[in-house]
Length: 354
Length: 227
Image (cartoon, chains in turn green, cyan):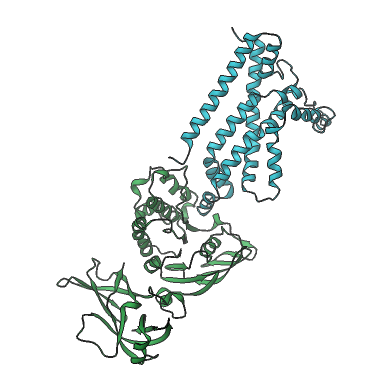
């Protein structure tokens, strides 16, 4: 468990947080620009001095009252928003800079595996000025990994990149998510990045924590802003069950049933995420048979909350998995929606993230 | 026409003076410039003004005060005598002290500018890569500021080469001891030995030009941001 408490006062804002972050998986610190995400991450790295702070990573105390472990003595990896490579060193020199300063018995990640994971083997002898923006970021991530950190802190590593570069790096980040067994704290203001990468979500607003928890739970909590608006969605952990060659489909199982999606070339047994937008889910009282919709699940209404003048956002439980649907207020009245009501949720489209 | 022995001696003293002064300035100026580029001290501007003074002050004014300070009755000269040494006016050591003050802005300013241009980010990156503050200074700050060092060294050296007023005030004009090239030229002109003056002046002009050409050319190649 990572315990962090910080109170940092600046001229124009105050960051006041107290949070516990699981020591496994990717935790996204999510919030609008200027909410204090980066300040929080810098405070965790010791780059932001704050007297009122407490930080414990597992059993290591990094900050408490007067005790303050200097940044260079903290076994962390940090990826800045800009690649920030050393311009006076080659790619290889950049990678080796940190590794050389880590005692041999603490080197768990070999420089070669970091190079391979980020696919930068062909760039080693280049000067940093000769790299594209995407390549620079990959080198920066490899450089942070190569010091065998016990925690990886990433400050919007994709924010400075255009869409094409984002697409170039995203697969590498996803493979980090699958292959690293260290906690990652990932600062982002992009819902898409969070949906793809995060296991846990900390919602930060104006220096305050609005909520924290597993991503599937956080996205569907009706008391949080994430579960509102056109982009409201549920993220559901699932496993590839089988492929249907005749119709070119893939079936993935989750706790509440089986999704049918268009064919994705993934091995059976592979963990995937399924994204179900609230606007794509409709409700019926009886199981529909004469419908083109394949993804129909028995569900129970858990809670509902007005969404604007004429709509209602409904949180459903589908076999213990939360899902959202947005219906008109009139439909809600006709269906007599209320907590505890059993009905069927049908999703007209779902997206597979992997 | 060949160099006379005394011209040769003056040349050697000049080069030695420029070299020693530049070295001292780099050694003292590097930590000072580093500190000035990083500190948020509110009165930093006063220190900056003091360092820039030799740029605008007539060298004779600087020389005059140094002469008083270094002489037997001055604070520094008196202190030297108290320790059983010689007063520093009219000695090579005195010249070095004078040159250090005289050329200070030419060394400190490029260094400070180069350090400031690095910004905090590369040092933070180095910190997250396990480098201690001293380690960061030597392995990140200095290499990234290298063009600033080249500029500082060459400007400090070249500026000391051309020193006249300060030397005349505190060094006198003792052949073999404190007589530097610029003063020999003056002497030759006074004695209407224009041939000698031409030779020395032309030599100094060429040397200074070559040095500056080298700096600007190298700085272009050193530049870490490529067009």
